[in-house]
Length: 239
Image (cartoon, rainbow, N blue to C red):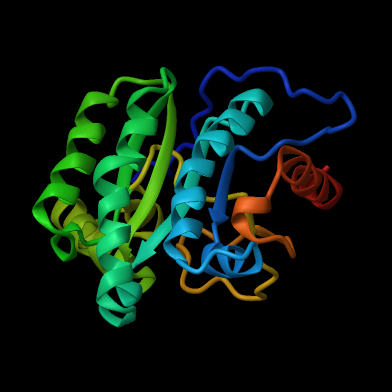
């Protein structure tokens, strides 16, 4: 079997000449929305989720400015759907229906990919995400959103798809190519906000060789300057 190619789309020039190496694929674990809301004095923690969802649009802009064409974000895990309070989960479903798909649709650059079990979502949220996937399919850059996501389940589905495609010729490259998401699977840099020192099952196969940057800031407070700091950390490690 031919190896999986890490294809590079046309890249914009990085903003800073001081960086020798910019990651091809960035993953972001957007953590701390509820804690941000409490720290900001909001009695309703859903305010944090709304700000966090809207902040994804800035993240897309930062990636565009740096010429990063592949982005993966952790939006909602399968475990969160099963264990968080129903009121909170229902609001997250509302954001998946009314906000996140729309911010992708109104961009002109980003194609949406979904990784996760959409059967865990209500019909309206599932259809809104699938519509955004179809409507953006021919765009040049790729954002994968983990929704109803379980890292081990992601690997199982990749293996099942690889077995169907390659049969007894299955190998690591075939499994990698069969995983959900955009055309470049391997994630070079993972950024986690809120200071938590764990990946929480974030794409375990795709992050086997990743660099990890932990920001102490909650996701809604994470800025363009913080993103640049993470890229500088990657450059120091890989440059």
